[in-house]
Length: 120
Image (cartoon, rainbow, N blue to C red; front, side, top):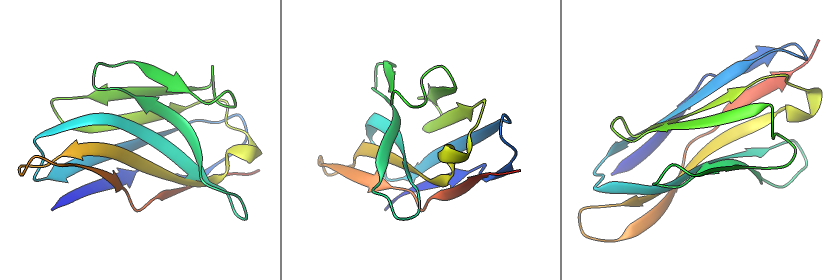
């Protein structure tokens, strides 16, 4: 069994910062790509940032220069540092990962999500 657990969401004023974390646990052989997605009310889930197993990071245009994603392969964790937050960043943020399990298959997993609200 594999789990992704996010933490770090909350309420912040416009211009503020938050740091999200995601930890993968369970029967993990290795983790390929990991990513952050978000879903605002009434909208489709969208890509925010992603990192390959080799450490290459890419971002959605809407968050470039404001968000920074990092990965710790030893701890099976990723983080998302979010600065200069705007009201339009309000959403539920989800962690996603492609994980190889002991029986050889690679599955895609989602976390349960963490709410980020940017409001004065």
